[in-house]
Image (cartoon, rainbow, N blue to C red; front, top):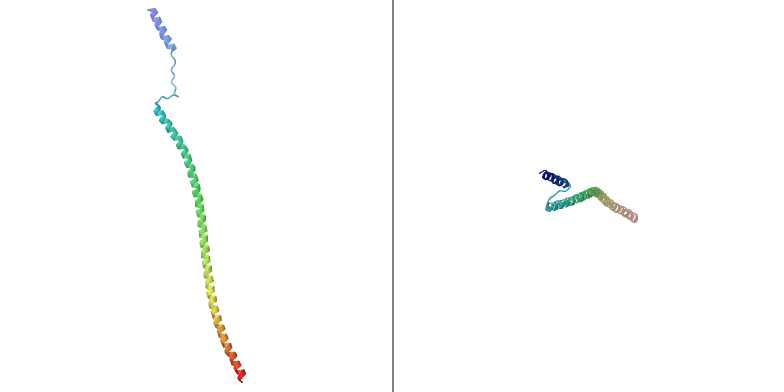
Length: 137
């Protein structure tokens, strides 16, 4: 029996020493391949979304720059429009003043023509009378 016990202890110790130490590797995670595929597709989608976010942020900043430029252009055009309106109103005032001066000048010309006609008639009558007196006297 001693021999049997000795062989038994020998075999138990031999198998105990000869077994590998099983270490748990925390880097390896075991899950089904379908779950792995889903994780990979979601990671790919996440990368795509990050790139799209960067692109959309660039587009937004470019659009904001365009909007500010167009706002400045609109402001400049409004100022030009205001200046043009002022010029138009000043030109209208100038034409009104010129028309008033022309009307006054026409009235003065009519008055001068009337005076000239009266003076010509009076002088004609005066010369005719003087000529008649000189001839028939």
